Amino acid sequence: MKVKYDKETQRWFEKNLAQQTTVMKCEKCGLFFKPSLGHKCKIEVEQ
Image 1 (cartoon, helix red, strand yellow):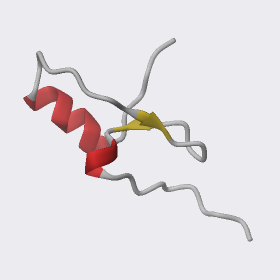
Image 2 (cartoon, one colour):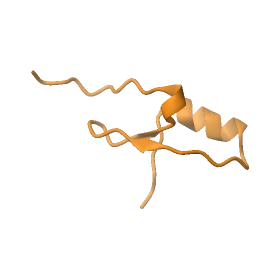
Image 3 (tube, helix red, strand yellow):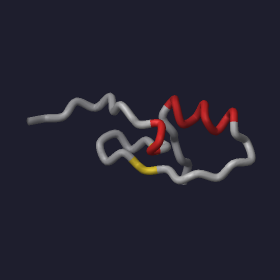
Image 4 (tube, helix red, strand yellow):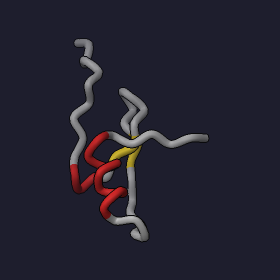
């Protein structure tokens, strides 16, 4: 399985190569993100 990160999390990993962190998966778009960085999903919420 190939994991895809949101842009902010990807940048974090590029700057912190040997670090470990916890990520979460967005249920709407499927991207993984670092919770402390937040995540702005591009999928519109249907109401």
